[in-house]
Image 1 (cartoon, rainbow, N blue to C red):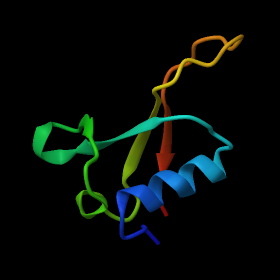
Image 2 (tube, rainbow, N blue to C red):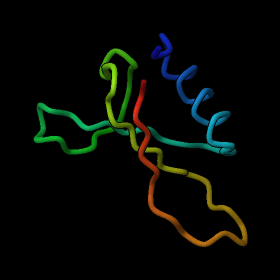
Image 3 (cartoon, rainbow, N blue to C red):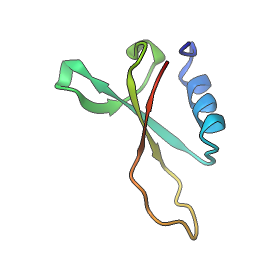
Length: 73
């Protein structure tokens, strides 16, 4: 299920996707025409919501890549 806190969700995603450093999460908000908006609380997302992961820290020697999208189950 979806963790109760944003911090726990970030921790779970970082562990599952083997990410390090700071990340920002965005979700598709139906109130804004399915645009991605910053996630501030896990209460904003529902089962099977699409979450976009944005890595905030620059990774040395890594090629730039767009944010990954995750489907929460």
